[in-house]
Image (tube, rainbow, N blue to C red; front, top):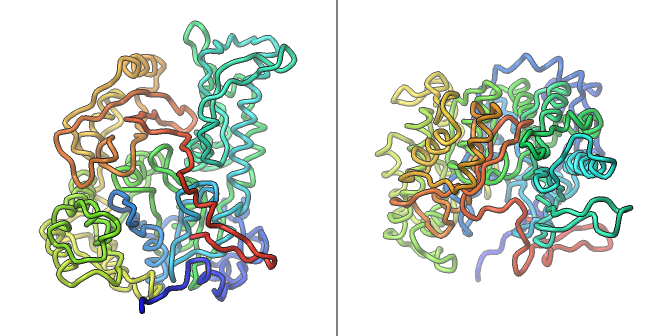
Length: 567
């Protein structure tokens, strides 16, 4: 008889949650320092944030992963488990996580709050409307869109070329029907007809600005710099010229305060902004990271998708703009996922297959090598354990990693919570305190590219150094866009690469560590408020659609309010 396991939502429902006032007290926060949202959620007050902002003495740990597969990697689970494990070995850790997009409408799965006995709670709230931050982001975004179209309707004094409006509407929903639309139909009273489209809220520039802003005043300045479109003379038009920044900032004022929750074991966790690293920023907010660093001895944070996306953006964009230097990096992998990279279909991953594991291991090794040789940071590999993993398979992973001078820690946090991550926690502490055996530490940290050089050079640096591409092909449109952006002074910005998460290449079918490929950049646009240039590669979309069987089909709620199907 096969072993049965409780679902994530069942485990979360049985948790002995502490009142959020008690979790805050563990961090030295008083009742006046928090704004409760019910019993188990709270925001940090502006006054407390101002008081604590100068204190950032904690060691900063980044958790990232191999390229995602259908088998799953468990990056968020490991991040949460590591935070719990740190407290198990007597270290004061605070976690900073990305906020999940609305679970039922994302389509692929129901949520993203960890799993097993390494979860943040209240799990259902976190995966649903939470504290309303995403609504505020969507409202601010769509206010600006409405003001653009209203300005055109009221006479177009700024001279918008209606064919070159770059600001899209957003909704926190995967809905391909909204990808390309025509709006303003219905005659003169209904506005000016034009082509438009929706992005998902988490892919918006507002989300990136939200994550990178350091204060209300910084937020307002960034919002004013947003480029919403161009005149017929190719001059940019900004949100500031529409006088939209004040009202947008007002909508975001409360959302900007980071959200405090807890893990199943009562470890404090901030959840704030930034889900998707393949199309936006992909990390939680700078504000949340700084709060974690101010209130703990170790701040454990994560970046979205594989290290070529989330970690690259965290290191090349967030750390650059926020002056952060990680003390250690954790790369999460599973034996199952590596076998998938080696060509084994999902249905056959339970069987030992050393040949396939050997074939898939280069994916992990390239991510590790990027951390240690491109960014020059100490690294540990966390193997998220499954019952089907064999000793021979685990030994092979450890041998290959040690050849790169990197230790491997078996993580059993899904099944055992913090207790199952103690080995990983001890290695992370060692790296944070002493660096690795090659002398790498926060002091040796380097970016993949410098501030100097043009947009194309920065894109090529990421493609060649991190992806190991032979080079980059820019479409004629992209070349023209780069020239135009550089002429407007945006060449000094870092680049935000929008690429499939499933491969180092821009072709999601090329698993493992492909070689002999080139990256195609089809569009380059500026997120002037966020402070970076976005390069869209391959067929990446900022408004995905739902799959054939959306996650929503498996989600339900009974008369008592008990939710099932979120995971």
